[in-house]
Image 1 (cartoon, one colour):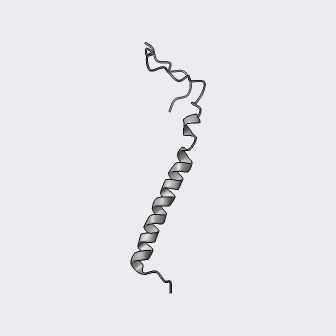
Image 2 (cartoon, rainbow, N blue to C red):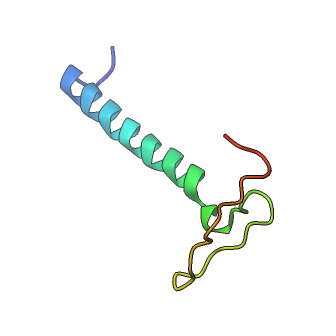
Image 3 (cartoon, rainbow, N blue to C red):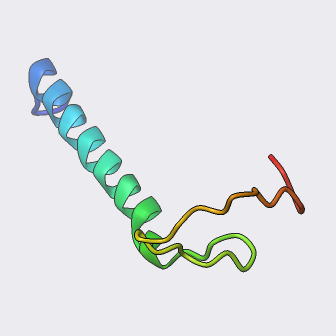
Length: 61
């Protein structure tokens, strides 16, 4: 038998699950600001004007 009671085991499990979740989120999102956009799409400037006609060539979802 372990030296921990049932409540302590549940609390330890909750803490470990939260820490694992934080670790997984950090692994997924680290370096995501350096991700490349698909194709050669430039990052638009916030002050730029939208195109009057949408470019519908290429891949679609």
